Length: 413
Image: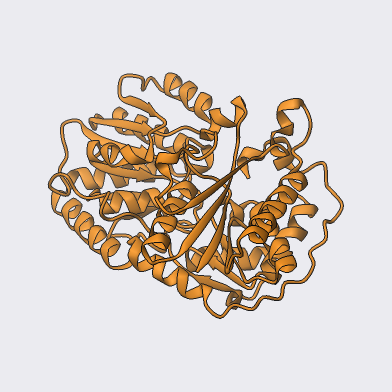
């Protein structure tokens, strides 16, 4: 089967979407399919600073995948003082897919993100008479469509007309259905996954040093709860609990985080690691002892799965997209979002109970192997490709709402 996968982000952009795309493509090739990657990327300094940018590096694309990189020039209009022109990027993606299909036909189109990529894929599918699949991931479901009338109408059209919609968890699907007045039956829940061969325990699960090493690995973004984590570390320190924090990643709130570290007097216990390439991420998990993800919402967290696969006990928040994989007191601990005191208390509970750390870490690793490893999940995705309808109605562009917050800060979309 020839599959065109249209990605919102790919390496060198540091994102869970990049890891998802790479692993899915690798397993499509292993299953005998012929995938083509059409990848958006930011090529401007501002875009590179937030996520990392540039076309997919050849050594990060699985062998057997054809690559076509599209610089998001419409999105980059913000660098010239204007609003982001998502419409131009949608048109370029649509035209690219149709051009590639005319050269050598595809069997199915698969979009990562409902907007802008999903809209482009559905428009291409309508013209070409092809089946299409749209994966709803992360901020796509949480934020897009809450920003303005334009994107609300377009995202709802994608949800209404995509032949198949994939989403990472039941709680995420329920949130999107409430927000956009959808029938839950529109979604096929296919959970996130991780590479259980790359991410493995390197030491006895549940070990801790003195001071214990907490690890945050992900986007440096207030929406991921990074500022709450710093407040929790400050509380632990005030209570004379010896901990260190490894802070791994880049993102839109790097400067805010650096300021908060100084304000809280944590410079001697917080070690920022900056951007870590995916091929070295397992080395970061090997340095951590307790993984902390104080996020406010997820689609299905790649980093939590990576930590679980790496044998780390996990502390996270009882929010959409997390509660589907972390079951409190079974394979991790959950606390309310936005509550640094509860976060600190959960970390302290783990530090005080070695048996609990070992039990949670062991159960988490087993759950990854059985439910959330890529061979298992990739098979569920390819099963969706078979037997899809090929009829997609026209989706016209509504009037542009210039007040949309994502037109001023498109990297947050």
